[in-house]
Image (cartoon, rainbow, N blue to C red):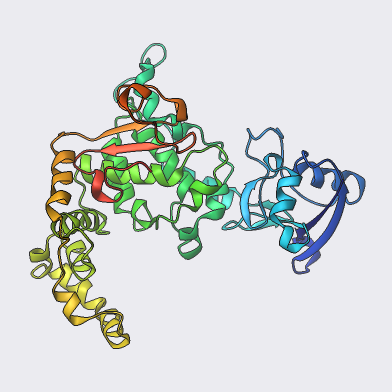
Length: 388
């Protein structure tokens, strides 16, 4: 079967700009895009550059963008990719990953971005005291919480797809923050609070994520980097009460308190509350919050002029008719006294247990191989007592 590919080529030594090359290969639809590229490279043009190794979706080397989506070339079948490109006569578009400089053709500089950011989060264990005579022994159940983040193969697909990094290249990024949670959640590490405070205070840290879900969609191993970032936030704000200079703590507390009071988001209160640890009163007297509010005044004026903001609605916000039910939900969650997170990455959809098993009268959340249930005082900060 014949497949058409459109490959992005770039050779810095030639001094020419990047260009597209149309190639055609004869392979079965079950074969991978990587197979097609390697066949063309072997049979026609050996100068085509692509990084690869295991060809089994384990090493993560062959990360590229196929039809605009970051993925592993070895894990993408030609037939599937061709179906996706049907609007372009079945042509499969292959280009290098985004958010990283291109070295040649489909090869990007992982050291300049991906690995540099991984080093930023101190990706090694920092235990307390002298090392033991032999190995650190940890009960298996203590490591379940970080199993999902440990599954990362460092392919860089999430970095390539990250919209926050497109806007702010200094953003630590989804891969590095997922790696950060791998050690924050490790019971052997002694620097949990220090790690969290460092990432919370960094203006390009955990509060720089915009919840676009792009990293979750492209991850070939269901690591769900955004979920790990949300976990870091919950640990920082909920477990350690870290009031950061980026107003992340204040924004989350303001969000929760407003919904508790009104049932829906009162956006005109969200901004001032966020600048004052969630308090509307503090936002009116704290010099730093007043300064930040003053900086946002032009945006407010533009909103009023355009009609996007109504002065009446900005001041008076109606509560939901059944607001007591919303408060009841808050009470039920917070009365537990602790947050419980179930890592369903291991058990998947076939989980059986007291809460989600068939005997409980409810099915386990149908969220693929990775899902998370968060409950407790801080569960409502961004996601509520919900399954993500």
